[in-house]
Length: 244
Image (cartoon, rainbow, N blue to C red; front, side):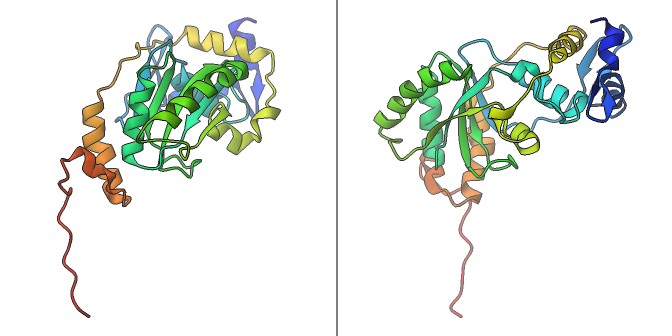
């Protein structure tokens, strides 16, 4: 497909070209003088710690830009067709940090953090191992399940499951086993990706995230296992209450 043919493809109510121009106008991305694209700078609010033990999927481009902006949530990106995740659901900050430490030794990309602010989740904390295809997910699952079961701070009560892609896809387009991928989507994504200037993945440091975001969240949510990471010192003094 030529660039003009790609930009003329209609996804939902508008063409790819129209949605691309809307994304530029809304400053979701910026178009440089040479026609290349880059994400507009945003303040980081990420609550997840990434582990890059393998090449990482391009979730920012595929979900944040292609799905939300270019496809206007009318199609799941073709680049996500084979994305499956083994999801771990820690119940406390103590379990979250323990599960993160387990994941350091798993040869897989994963992320760990506070999931409470994910509108499509009912979990306080979550961890996700990213794999390529359902068979890889089924192969990884028993290894993760065993590591969780055998850990002294985790155990069989910590849920582990397999899911496909991102939850916002299912919230809009229905169950993930019904996804359909139009052949032209791969041409569209390859063309727009060729115009993108991307930055390499950089590991983030655990300590700033743990003490700056995870511990305060645990305190506010009533999870006193945060005391494991403050030498037993409460984050704030308790307010006095009086005899009524």
